Image (cartoon, rainbow, N blue to C red; front, top):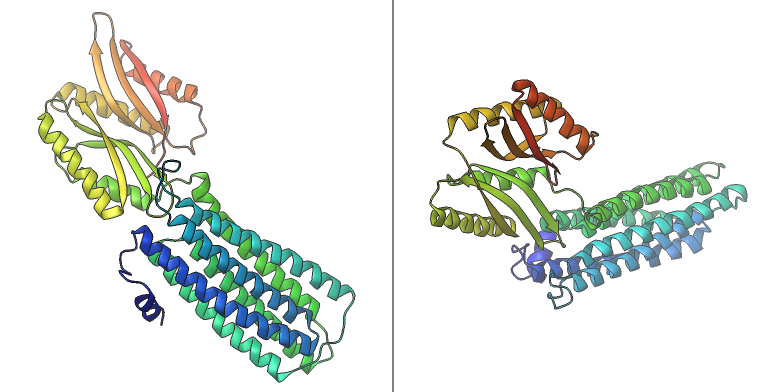
Length: 391
């Protein structure tokens, strides 16, 4: 059914990297959410009034907030789909992340309010009436919310949308919450034990947990999370498929919203390579990355010595010494300048952010290790913290 809706309402539905197509996915998700959540909210309000159940009424408010969240998602995708302008040359794609964050905040607020109402019901219990109509409404609600979870998760994964993933998570928490409400209603009807307030409290905990997880997923790209290691590996492998390139380092990926990523890195080429041939290969790499990953890329060429056996052997020795300190460390831009009294080994070392050593300590340890090879070696190095890591 999801594919049928997508093909019915979205032209060029398979061009998920196109911001205009992404916007249509967001609008479809938002409209479906608004309509279904308003219907569920109305049905549960009726059931809550019919039975006097705080948990059912709270679940109705939960669905009403979900309808509001769907409005936020729809507006967020609409704003994110705006074209770049003079004030925002990278577009407005991060509005989608902000919409997801606002949805998460709304989820958390609903969880807090539901928790407060449930605690009041625990300390001041009231009788709850049983109604077969209410049970039927709750069962239908569970089935609808389960479908909405699968619907939004499928759309979210198709277009890689944190906002839709947050909406799917919210729908799943609603399935658990409404199931708990249904269980509490049945227990109350079959026994004299009133657990309405306790069920409401359990529902509140599930909602808060879902809201926190969704908030984290949308905050990470806003704060600048490291790129996916699988993506980093794919880019590196693509680059190294070109024979003119012998190494890659200083890879940085900036995320300005889905479909609006920029990438830069240094590509090492032999210092005696044909300049025009190397430049043509770099241009081809930039186009290929854009076509395959939808990422605008800028590449800087670094010429290095590849045909000097002594330098190659020395580079391998230094690389081994560096990786003894941390296997994830790497070196690049390795150069050697010899003089009558000493030899300068000039290079950059890339240190993973998880490494607890200071830049000064890294420099000291590497210098000691290299000087142990030969006291005439002088180390001139630059410490870089890595922006991307490979799996």
